[in-house]
Length: 501
Image (cartoon, rainbow, N blue to C red; front, side):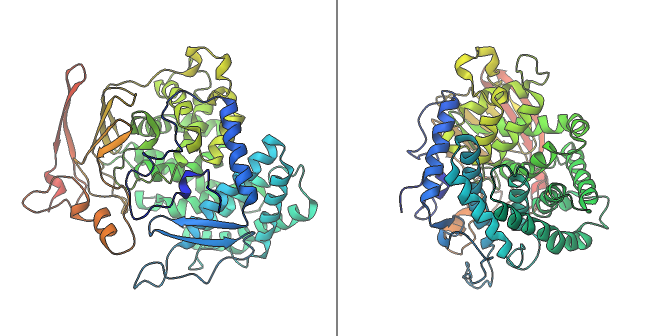
């Protein structure tokens, strides 16, 4: 198999926490990309995707790879256990991540590079979905795979120009069946009677399925669309509300906040009441953007400090930030929130090879927000470098000396969110310098038993303080003091007593 241009297909031999930091595919520069750079990356990826006859899905959490024949004409059912002594593994989630990235690449090449071969491949593979008997997860429940399929069908079917009529009809039939057969019955039991949503109710898995389902229902003019849209709006408002809970600001960590918001923001971009909702959610979105921007590694703005459940294989936040800048910061010189000018500065300095296909498409489509015409821009058009002042974000305190690879980032854990997949890491310290995280933890938990799992979960996996051989069991950290002692020198004091039982 030819070498993949996609960094998320790297095959690690065991767990290497620096595999993305050290990748030779990322150029050692933070010079902003320009339109020609993005087009070159898209063309390279499209050429590679067109050569593939199998879809190789790397399950990095268990260090295994499965090859699926293309097109994927049925929902895969005969799959291995994945983890010893467990009868199931969520194989379809990573399959759909990889399929969606392939499809969005082919679609972008078709629409932006006039690549008819890419367009035909996309049409054939989407039409093949009509052969699937169900669009549910491995356990026959609506879940993340359902949400990703709904997102793809909603996005690709919105413009029928250039489609072969038979392929479009088949893909449209699959979309309508997904709503009627799987989504709507699930909604009746999972969401219809649910009110007064709690933070646990707005966990990424059920909400992504709901929001993407609403997006698809709108796209196919389903009679259930209004009900689904209303519940999606209710969940978004609940997220906004809990985000500003002073005692426990809601977060699932930078990666999973991005994963969830990728669904919310693409759905919201086409919502009938988009303008009013954007005004209502501006402050919460700005707070979220600050967390994404200020948690990045100096000199490598595609990477976040691996605090709690953070995965470099999940760059969904880049899609969100591009959409938000388009909404709120089209002209950095007149933006009223500093974070949008700062985001405009940071986005084109994310290595183009690390942008997912959705972000590439957004960057090429929204030239004003994504700097695709940088050659003709002034410095003011490119936004302003983010501040080096200390920042308190939902899950951390961030301290930094600057934004180049020679600068230092110190991030201190402050998460009080009770989302179950996060770690108990109050006071956890992460240091980033010279394009590497040096004091760190691996971010997520390895699923497979053995040395890797021991390294990625449990008392030994984190450098949060262990007192008298007792490790943290609660997220009760409190910020006592954040002081600038001198230029570039800061003092942080935390109360960790509520973190221990």
